Image (cartoon, rainbow, N blue to C red):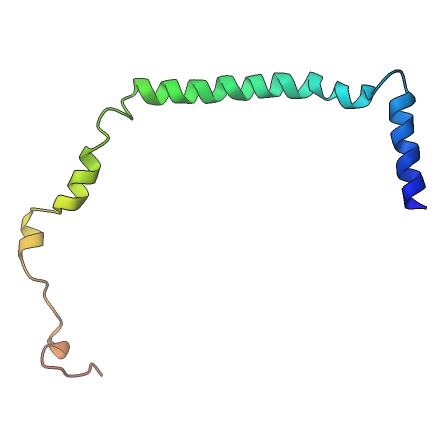
Length: 90
């Protein structure tokens, strides 16, 4: 039964004024939407390019590897008194 319904609906689409007219009508919506999305992505890319997002690509990678050189990195971390001598905190 389902197979016959599917065949009928396909035939009605094919026979209604040419080959697949309802399927082609969606292109009137999809082509302008895809062009609008293309222009939006292009605008976001150019904004990032002009604002300097891509100027220094290696600097952040080197900063991560070099670490902090401030006074906090050179001083040892202070531990609580209860964990110094192997005692368990109560």
